[in-house]
Each structure stands twice: as C-alpha cells, then as structure tokens.
Length: 66
Figure: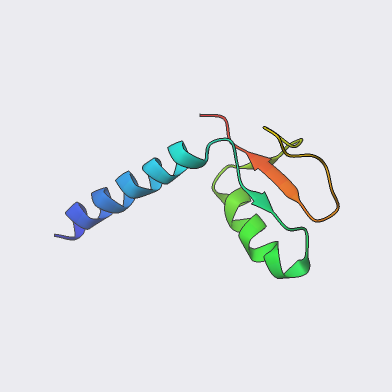
C-alpha cells in the first residue's frame, strides 16, 4: 500500500511540474521565502519574466527545464 501511495504522490508531483514548468510568479517579500526555497529545492531557478508579465519589484519569476 505504501509503495502504491508513493507512486501516486510521484505522479501528482510530475503532473504539477508539467503544469507549472514555465514557473511560478512569487512575491519577493520575506513571507514568501519558504515558497521560493521549496521551488528551488525542486529544481526551479530564477529567470526573467515570461509571457505577458513584466519586471516589477513585487514579483519573482522561476522556471524549470524539463
């Protein structure tokens, strides 16, 4: 049972990464530091704004190469 749950968790995580591969937009405030650390631990790196986003002091952009 535990192996099956581990596989399900991995599948959900993989699906999340596919949906978010362009990366999250996170606020640079200290309150979001744990979120930025989590994304960095999962392989995301900082990047320039993407899509229609523009650089502003209230946003941080991250991406992951798949």
